Length: 314
Ligand SMILES: Nc1ncnc2c1ncn2[C@@H]1O[C@H](COP(=O)(O)OP(=O)(O)O)[C@@H](O)[C@H]1O
Ligand SMILES: [Mg+2]
Image (spheres, rainbow, N blue to C red):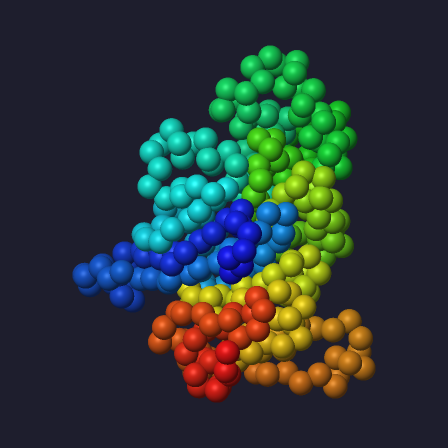
C-alpha cells in the first residue's frame, strides 16, 4: 500500500457477496455470504503480487472481481489511474482489454472445436483489431514463438497438445491484446510438476519482455516465494497480512500465515526432518473482528485486531 507512486492497480474495500441459503436447503431464506470482505491492496507496475490462502478463501473471487467478470458488490478498483467500477458497457469493454486472466485448467479454457490459432486470434477479431487475415496470422505466429510453441501448429486442435502446451496457448491468447495486467489463477496447479517451472519461467520472461504486472493466485508457497515481489494472505475473504515476499517469509506475524508457511516442504531431508510443523487447528478461529490493516514495518501490513492481541506496536 505504497502511496508515493501511483500503483497500476489499487483495490480498496472490495466486497463481494453471494446470496446463499444456509446449509443449501431450498426452504431457507437467502442470506448474503461475504466471499470477499473489505479487501484492499495495490500492485505496482511490473511487479507480481501473490495471493495465497486456503481453498474457498476468496482468491478466485477477487481475481474475477478485478476483471469485472463478477462485478464487486462494493468497493473501488483503480486501474491505470482510472476508477473502473461503475463504467458503462463500452468503457468497460475497452478497459477489459488491458487485463486478462489465465486459469488453472487450460483445456477447460480452450475451445475443443476451434483450431488453436483461431483461438489465440479470437480476441483480436472480437475487438475488431487487425482485420486483415494475413496480418493477423503473422501476429499469431509471432505470439506462438513468443510462448515457446512451433507456429506451424496453429491449425491443430487443443487435444493434440500437452497440458503445458495448452497453457502456453492460453497465455498466447492472454497477451494478444497487449494487456498490462494478467491475473493468473493457479496457472500451474493442474500441470505436471516437471513442466510447472517451464510455464513459470515463461511468465517471468514475458513479464520482463512485455512489461507485465501479475496478480498470481496460488497455493504453492514455494512458487510464490520464487516469483512474487509481494504476498497477500487471504483468510475467509479477508487479507490478514500483506508484505514484501522476503519479509513475509522471514517474519510472518499472523498465526494463520505462520501455519501456511510452516506447511511448505523443504527439498532437504535433514532440514525437513528438523522442521517444526504448526498444525492447522480447524477449530481455531483466526477470523478478525475488523479488516483494518496496520503497517507494522515498511510495506508489512497486518490485520489490526491481531496487532492489538499480540501487542505489536507501530
Ligand atoms: N457464484 C457463487 N455463488 C455462491 N458462492 C460462491 C460463488 N462463487 C464463489 N462462491 C463462494 O465464495 C467462496 C470463495 O470462493 P473462491 O473465490 O472460489 O475461493 P478460492 O479461489 O480461494 O478457492 C467460497 O466459499 C465459494 O463457495
Ligand atoms: Mg480458486
